[in-house]
Length: 236
Ligand code: BTN
Image (cartoon, rainbow, N blue to C red; front, side, top):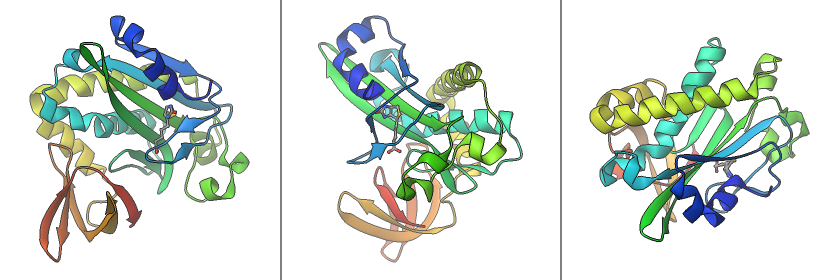
């Protein structure tokens, strides 16, 4: 399959009738990343898309922007539970890192489908694959659970745990976003760092203070506090 997000988008109307639905492949050949990025994956990588009906998430519109960071927290929790010795961090807006290298990327897309809105949460986790097989530019900034631990993981168990954690966090966000965001901030890679962010073609530089309860990155810049709702971190 080329891309689980692409297939989920193509089948969205049908998938929403049975949502939550999962599109999963062990062999994704043209994974999509944020913007124009691609997602590299080989055998042993976990690649899936979770399809939700926006109206059934129980989240008001103003909290739906938290989906990517909450998904990242779910993955980080599972990695910490299986390998507590690893230095696992969440990097706003949508990455999970081990030892400062990317182990998981998340691509959240919203699509209108007839009378509903579908949320497609695409998750790629480098699990039993090794980055030694990756192109050089991917190798220098990414890692896998196997590369960090020299162990193989049960993919089914890992997937079930990620989905369980996501479900639990998603329900908690609806009533207590502050406590979920506190946990994100406890493990936020960017907090306290001097960063540069490309926010839609405009570069913003400053010290990252925190991720706020609406998902905004709070940046202390020379012009004062800026709140960013999206962008690519270009330096840190
Ligand atoms: C990023 O880091 O830019 C996001 C990467 C998201 C990759 C996942 S793999 C499963 C799903 N299907 C895709 O085509 N992309 C996402």
